[in-house]
Length: 305
Image (cartoon, rainbow, N blue to C red; front, side, top):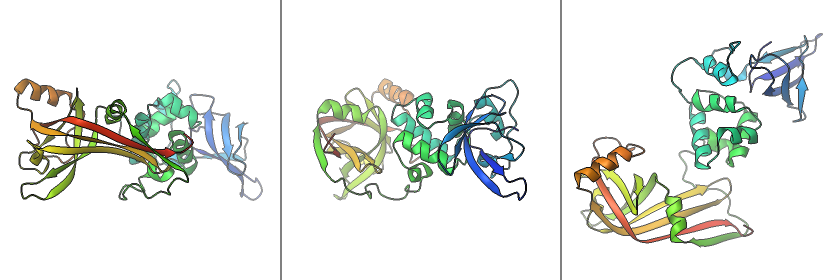
């Protein structure tokens, strides 16, 4: 008998073949996937050490849909065995794995810390983040709890919905952020919104991928694009984050004059240090810089914090 984390241990009645008990394998004691296992039972949610008998078998839940089986190598670690189950080669994370990795990194958590909080091995978490996988509901619940988010968010269920549909806090508290807190929240890069007046005089708010370089907010665009209308004008640039599950969040607003970066060495330096290419695609080689004259922000949280 061989298993890996996330599989289901099923114990059946020898006489009738009816499932008497089942649970998720949440701990391995041998790298080759052999017993004993730490099992979280579905009927009690308790974890016990189990030495499976002849009336038990393994359901490989994480790999049934992909049509693969778990064939651990005798001299490899757990993470390598899981990688082999999904095929060798470069990591190919699925949607859930990408969301887990992004949320973990956003909160500054290591894989080891996250795995400990979610009661799983770091190797299994690495497998989830690096390979297409279909974790069980129990696994997603533990991951969501460890990351302070929801199962729906990890599954991307609210990707097409505007943030802020959660319930309001019973006793919300709004606080102003000082300039240093605002700079910290802007961090080094991300997606923000720039408010401009277009050539026909109409207002527009558009998202852009931005970088923070020194005291300036910079982004790439095309000369004929809406964001390019910011050049030479005083504009507003806004970044925010909403924690839907906790009905809390923050926003930062920068106001300043936008200008084109024209010095060749500066343009090359910006292109080399850019964390991502513009999501909008196409040729966007015009760098626009905003040096905030004012930087303000607000945070909403429970009154007791």
